[in-house]
Amino acid sequence: MTVKTTIDTTNDIATAAHDFLEELEPTQLKVATYPFTEEGERTRVFYTPTDHGGLSFSAMTPRQQSTAMRLLSATMSAGFYRTAATIMGLENILAGSEGFIDFDHDPDTIRTRDPNRYQVSVFGTPGIEPWGWRFGGHHVSVSLLVVGGEIRLLPSFLGANPANSTGVGANELRPLGAEEDLGRALVQSFNTKQLAIALLSDVAPPDMVTTNRSELSMSIRTEAKPWTIWRRDEDEFSSNAVKAVEVNLENLGESHLAALEYSINPKGIFANTLESKQREALAALLKQYIARMPNGLANAEQSRINAIDDATMTFAWAGSLEPGEGHYYRIQAPNLLIEYDNTQNGANHIHTVWRDPQRDFGRDLLAEHYKDAHTI
Image (cartoon, helix red, strand yellow):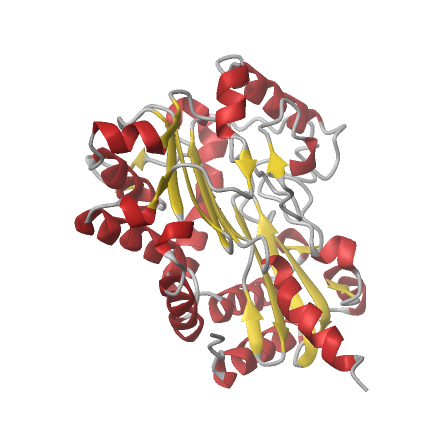
């Protein structure tokens, strides 16, 4: 069953995108906009502090930055917007913890950890379908497509480094705390038999297994050199980050890599074998990801998730069950993939992604659109 997105949602997003573009100078428009047919760029997504494509906040006036943030706010739920804004602010905390080092960048022109290193790309013309836009930067990346009155907001990526930091006294800042706590609560509810099925590996992978691939293939393994997560592999900063991943990979043997491998055949414990309270816990975890979308779209997505056969959905865990130690989980169904990883920086660095092998970047909607366009 397809649940239509309300026309108000698509109109609001198109209006916000139009207002953003109206604020730009001609030279900025050339950087911020792409033809919709620029498939290679439109289906690229990053989550590292690399060039995400499009116009950077650092190249915008304050007013232009404001309209860009308004566009993000119009596109996502209020909760997502607040979380994304918090994550962007973490760049200043991360810079301080690293000693304000600018790695390979010239500090007179660009900061490595910078809340202004987020970029906006618009594909096509807002309001004239199909069209889309992308917001990308370190640990915040979303891709939107609108066609036929329908919206796709996939892939949707959020990360946090540090995942847990303290302010004055006992104040804690955990922008992705619920994603962590709900997942751990579910796996800790498993009995010995259930845990033996759900636990893929006693060692967690050093990152999400599927990383930022534009398409999810039949099988994907954790890579020693995942250069695809950087736009340029000669970047010194990316080289240093990959070295850190390689160190973590030393704890993974062949059996771990095979067990953690992403496959179109879901791994882990099937939802239909869970007890009633455990199914409720899984539903609460799923809802945490669904809540990233604005209300109308979230309701449609909730209906779609509710319709998934529990016999085709799995939950898998890897690593420790204890807080502060490296861990990973995956929720998978034929038309759903959620990955969560918290292993880097002493298990204080979270990566999460919500995507769909069939619907990422609106591929399902575009296939139907082009099919109808060529029907005589």
